[in-house]
Image (cartoon, rainbow, N blue to C red; front, side):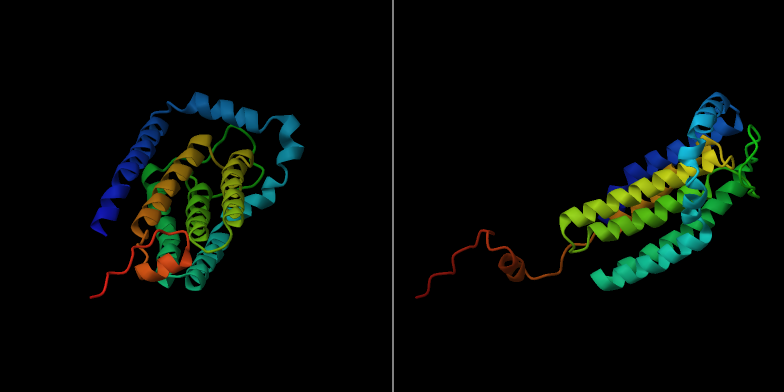
Length: 229
């Protein structure tokens, strides 16, 4: 377990550094030009029809939806095993929600006022909870899917769809006018840190006996039995 912890440490430190630097830049108003440029591009009139479904997609990153995903994550862990990984995944999603709220209260960034919002949200803005929790919930679920025994093509297809969903949830928050792009970037980064840490810490070595593993793959080289006599 200690080795797994240290293997996840470099990426975790890198991700945390990015979030901290974004928070400092946001607090110093250094990200305003970037935020304005991205918001202007996303809210261009020609894209309104294309992005209109995001009004519903954004709900997949809501607390209600993420809670449902946490339950599904636990059930997936029970089905594909080990069940502890599903339980840890569900608890990780819940913990991510608590941490996100704490960071929001600490940074205390107000919601965007550059454009008229399409929906109204309350509370602070940095980091985006929908982006962060979407990344954690669907990212952890993706880890469990990749560890399942479904055909590889199916697993990859599901993970790609989950990745697209994470992307669309983040973009929806910008298009709806309730988050700055830097809020979403911070949410994605923080969520990715948690997913990587979860994946590394729950990466177990199969307890299956070596003989059974060999039998499962006839192409595996076998050692000759010892000579008798």
